[in-house]
Structure formats: structure tokens, C-alpha cells
Amino acid sequence: MQPSGGCPSGPDDQTLNAAGDWGHWEVSDKVRLCRFLCYGSEGDVYTAAEGSHVDMGRAGALLSMLQEGRGIEAVNEIKRFAQDGQSVRLDPSIFALALCSQHSEMATKRAAFQALKDVCRDPAHLFSFIQYKKELKQDMKCGIWGRALRKAVSDWYNAQDALSLAAAVTRCKQRGGWSHKDILRLSHTKPADEAIALISKYVAKGWKEVQVAYADKNNTEEVVKVLSYLEVVEKVKHSCDEMEVINLIEENKLGREQLPTDHLKSKLVWRGLLKDMAIRSVLPILGKMTAKKVLQPGSAETQALCERIQSETALEQEEVHPFSILLASEHYKRGQGYQGKTKWAADGNILKALDVAFYKSFLNVEPVGKSFVVAVDVSTSLSSVVPGTSIRTAVAAAVITMVFARTERDTHVLAYSEGALEVCSVSADMNLLQTTDELVKIPGGSTDLTLPITWAIENGKAVDVFIVLTNNPLWTFTTSPVEALRKHREKSGRRSKLVMCGLTSLGHTIADTEDRGLLSICGFDLGAFRVIRNLAQDLM
Image 1: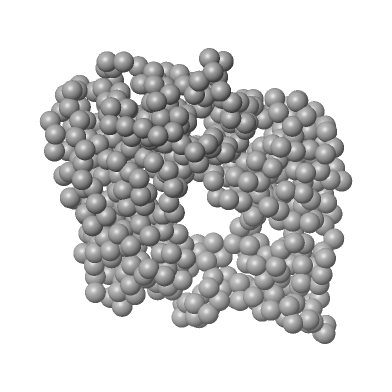
Image 2 (image 1 turned 120 degrees about the vertical axis):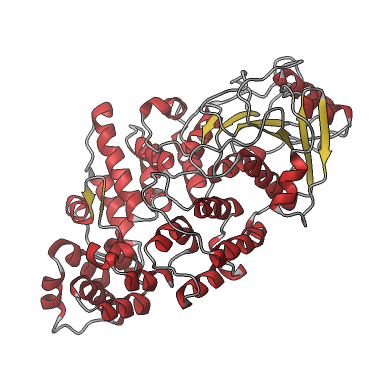
């Protein structure tokens, strides 16, 4: 077993522990902050599909860094997680930025406001930022609409491309009790150019006043484009001609958020919307569209959508992940919504398109470049369903395995139960069914989480990340998994990590919460892949 060629880079300095070895990896405030920015908790447990609301109680590490004068450092981490797409959800980063903007130290406050346009990229994010500042006002006993915030908000609007801003303010008009009209008024925004001034007037006064104000002006080309776009949005709102609405949608790529509710009752309007709707937005509503007969077997619209779903170009442009397609496919096969009210008969052609897209989308997964062991615990039946999905745990384990086996050059796949462990031959040309069968071929027993780590030690494998997938919340250990991991670190010289995925778990931990390389995942969702990736790359 050969040591790695140096210490990995991460969010803080790498140091030996007090004993002078690599067995234990301490958790710093910066690591806790990075966990918070990634999934909204400073702890070592990620819960799939957990609610996004955050508050001061979850941001202890950030508060400590601010008190230590490390505010600029914290803002830089917030920007990094937001800009590089490293967060499972953006709310924690927006909350953290709002908290930094309330800090008494001017350098931190200035850096936070300067980062607003980088972190809050659309109106919904901006509204969340303002709301968090309002909530923090009570705790921090300071005002909201000072000069710095007014300037930051003004800069946010003025930094936008005019046509993109026109689309944004008509798609997301208000959120959480805030509207563009409120914010433009409170920030005293002074438009940087005539096109932004036009949009501000539209938001504040409405379309009729805009028509009057710009009717006889010698308008610039940009203003003319914005006027034309807003005119289309207004025409769609008030048109009673279904074909006119559809033509306007298709010609101007309008979204459903820009349409009144009555238009969304029309099958033809929905067919027009689906033509340019992002694949990521289409996948969750395939069942609803089939139930409402918007998508019908053999229709031209269904055929066109199937072609787009399985287009390598479209999948690559949107970076659609195979797990997203599997979630959509399994839900569509189910034939009814989770509440049981909406039901549909799954279209075979749509299922085939999803199947093709599933395998093509593996090309969108960027390799981490680390050594992985993916170990599947088969001590109990893998016939349960992952909470919040329609996916059986055996299928979930198979697709997780496939993601790493197909994208990482150094991946070992193991199936194990008490006293039995087998190396699985999962190759890139195996399909989902073949992979599932390969994983469950050994008999069950009681669970011993240490087996995969012991196997790596005994076979001289220097592993960066152990990913253990289990359906069993109760474990029996011959030795502590934490101690086994430390032994592997000492033998290999690597900062090895252990990720314990309880596929049906609603809450569990690995015991040692003060080791940076230990992480528990309860349930599983698309965000879990991002969490594992961040841990593997020492980003948290």
C-alpha cells in the first residue's frame, strides 16, 4: 500500500493530530462553515430532501469566524460555493451572505454587499436575501435599508442585461412577501441606462404608463427590444385567442410563470410550452402531462419530446444527471402522484426515451479523480423504497454504483454481509438490471460495516473514499468503523473518508462527529452526489 504523494488541499490547513499521525482529522470552524454552505447544517449528517430554511442556530461556525475577524475569508467561501455550483441548495449561502452584511466590521460588510450579484443570480435569490436581512434585524438590532444595501440592490439591477432583466421581472414578480416594486422603491434605485429605466417604470407604474411615456420617444435599439418583449408579455396576459397565445409563447420562448392561470388549463398551450421547456423542468411533470392528455401516445408532440429527452446535445447543455432521469422514470412508471390523486397510463415511448437518456447522461458526470470503494450491504433485503422517491433501495444502490464505476477510473465495488464479502464486476457496458443482479448475488446476514475497510487494508488498496450503502439502520461491528478507518489512514498515508449512506434512514450517525472525514447520509437524492463530491475533493 503506497502513501499518496502529499497532503490534499482543502478549506483549511492540513495538520497531524496530537499523536503525530494521520489517524484523526479535526473539524475546524471553516470546515463547519463549508458544510453549512453545502447542505445547511454544520454537522456531519446530510438528510436528503430536507427543508431549506436556515437560521442563526445553524450558523455557529460563521459567527465564530466573524468574531475572530475572519469575515472576508467567510465571504470568499460563500462566493465559491455559490458560483461553482457546490451547494445542494443556495439558501444557506444567501443566509450566510445576509449575516455577513449585517456585521459591524466594515471590510466584511463591504465584501458581502459586493458579492450580492455573484451569489444572488436571479430575483428569487434577491428576495430571499432581503427577507433574511429582515429576519436578522430582530436579532442583530440594526436597520436594513441603509446606504450600503440600497447601493448593492441598485447595482444588482443595473448589472443585468436589459432583456434578461425584463424576462426575470415578468417570470418571478414576487416571493416571500417581497416584490420588485417594493425593492426598487426602498432601494431608491437610479437606473444606469434607458432600458433599465424602462423596466423600472414598468414594474412601478405598469404597462399603460410605459406605453404613454415611450410612444413618441426616439428610442434606442435596446429600448425597442425591451418594449417589444414587454408588449408580448402583456398581449399574452389579455389574449383570448388560443392560437395567438401559442404563437407568442413559441416565438418569444415565454415560460409558464408569465401566463395567467386560465391559459394553463389549455392542452394546446401546454404543448407550446413543452417545446422549449428545459428537460430538467419537463422530467417532474411527465406524469401530469400524460394524465391531462397533453402528451398522448403516438402524437407528434410526444415524439418531438422523446427525441429531445434523449438528445446528447440537450442532455449535455443542461448537465442532466442520470439520477435525475432515474427518479423521473421510476415515478412515471408508478402511474400516479405521491398523493394518489393524479393517475396516468405510462407511455412506452416516453419510458424508452428515458431509458436511452439515462445511459447517455453518464457522460455529464465529471470525474473527481480519486480512489473509491463503493460497498453495498446486502445483509437485509434491498426491496424497500428510498423515502420521498419511487426507487427501490436495490436500484438506488445499483445506480450509485454505476455513477462511480463508469466515471472514476479507480473504483472497487463490493457486496458484503456478516463474514462474507465479494468483489463485484461492474463494468461500463452493464445496464441497470445487470448491475442490480451483480450486487445482490451473495446471501444476507448481519451487518459488519468494517468489512470494506478491512478488505482494503488486507489487499493493500489505498482508498480515498469509502461509500457504504445500507438498508439496515442497526449495525453490529467486530471492530469500530472509525478505528478501522484510522488504521487504513495510517497504513496508506491517505486522508481516507467514510460516507455511510442509510438509504431508508431518517437519522443516524457514525459515532465520531469530530473527524472531518466522516459523513452520514440519510436517504438519498441528487444532492447526495454533490455532498460526496465535495467531501472527496476536500472542499468541506
